[in-house]
Length: 147
Image 1 (tube, rainbow, N blue to C red):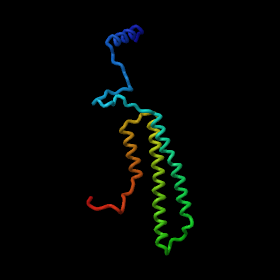
Image 2 (spheres, rainbow, N blue to C red; image 1 turned 120 degrees about the vertical axis):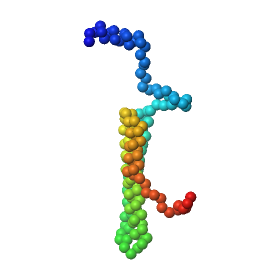
Image 3 (cartoon, helix red, strand yellow; image 1 turned 135 degrees about the vertical axis):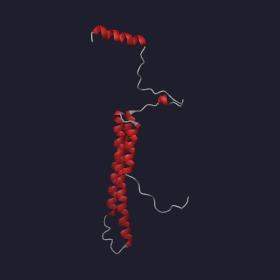
Image 4 (cartoon, rainbow, N blue to C red; image 1 turned 180 degrees about the horizontal axis):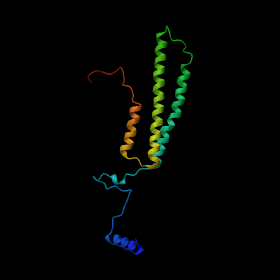
């Protein structure tokens, strides 16, 4: 394409008054202020770092839980000691899962904020994966039937 031809195409497009592209604006479909919605990379990253940072405190708590369990010894012949050991194992797994969930969720928030390239559906799918991976057990006891 010759330079003159290119200049003529640009001039024709300008004469038609082509639409301007504006990426930071979405029309407000119902008049409630959606057009002011903005996403902030720093907010996403800060939230992710905060949630990921919980892993350290949870790790310390898990260490204290382990230290508090030392000295229990053989639980044979003592039902309360056996029950306590079983409870300890259950809580140790639960706390480790909470730590893992914080790491996974924090990482997702940080990745989402890094480039804001994930769609809402992609973020929701990742959150659903985390929820399925760390699905809590059903509560037992203290539940009235039929309510």
